[in-house]
Image 1 (cartoon, helix red, strand yellow):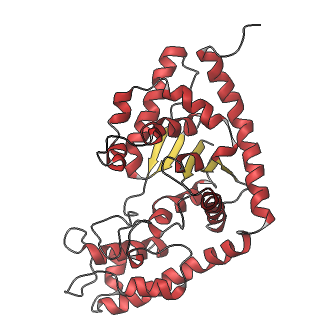
Image 2 (cartoon, rainbow, N blue to C red; image 1 turned 30 degrees about the horizontal axis):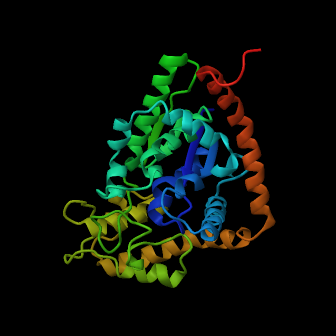
Image 3 (spheres, one colour; image 1 turned 90 degrees about the vertical axis):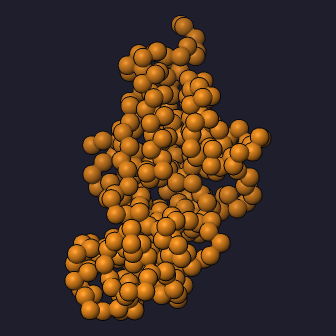
Length: 329
């Protein structure tokens, strides 16, 4: 089995875009590969965080990991800051990366917003992300398409250091990118990605939303005036977005959905989609409530950190030896 690593920031409730684009694949992968899933709290502090809220959000995301079906017996689930090797290897990766590479990162340009002074963490967090992956000799990294540039940098760092220090310094990972058709857009603006930070709460459906909120968001979702259920992203982005959600939860093809609703308006389609999404999210919400404030959650995270350290420490020691840390005996 190949080793898989991926991480999610503890930034509040996970929405359908996160789930269908990435986390659903995490669950599928654990039955095929050796999976390591991390809540990356060190990345979270690249922007200001309230310490109390950060701790709560870490546990929120950990509970959601388990609620969606990640099995701690099959996968390792842990919190990044509880394995010191991430920060230690992050520094080594930073020292083997040029400022030019970091300034070219499109996400840094977007997040810095052209300001003259921003937190250094925003600039160097791609090297910490590289360390997260390389620390576990990961071969596969399931990520969204917006992370392609960071995966390329991780591969560049690994190949550069392998050339400099020896081919056995790092395993060079491959990205496994979001499945075609799984890109979920905002319900109120289907030309923009679904986002946790959007001001309109009805623009997204979060995994812990109550049934009435799900219904309201779907029934108010932007479509078009012709009332024909047809997948056409360019000309009918709203209904195409809703069909993407429908297909993801039912495994029906777009052709099958079109045939089912031939001669029906958007009202019938939306009503059925409401029930589909409510039924799919109900067990996730139930499992989350069951585990979120339990001792079991803490025990799983502590065990996960222990198992993660067992993999990470030999890798870190190998790289430290390569770069010249420690003593000759």
